[in-house]
Length: 112
Image 1 (cartoon, rainbow, N blue to C red):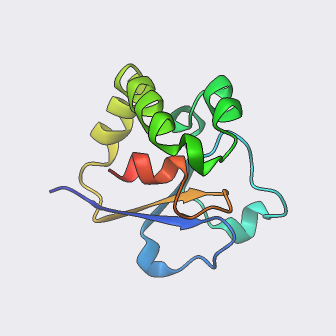
Image 2: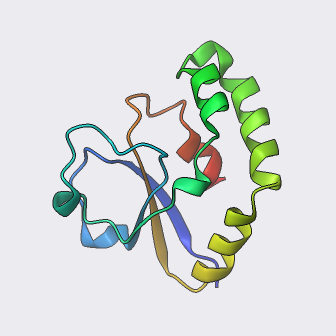
Image 3: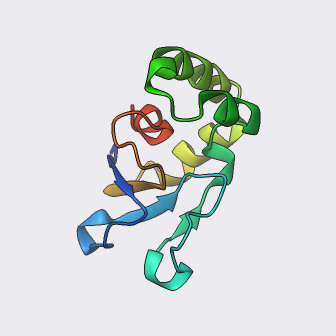
């Protein structure tokens, strides 16, 4: 069974329908209290590398190139394989991210 994978900003209210909630940012989202985040896991290793994150800087003009570079990182990231194997039987997984831009962020790439 393949889980349904959703994405959601860390600043949105947690809901039961979110299922297994995983923060996929390397940095903790500002102003979010750990208790209120209702996370099941913080998977820092799934986030883009620090150099890639800094290079991208959430600039929509760099989005296409960022996706290519991030996908290349993910192909060589053992944490991705481990995550998929561990949670392949979950019904719903929600990837939580802190970026303001809901159309140009790494959680979209992970969701795919």
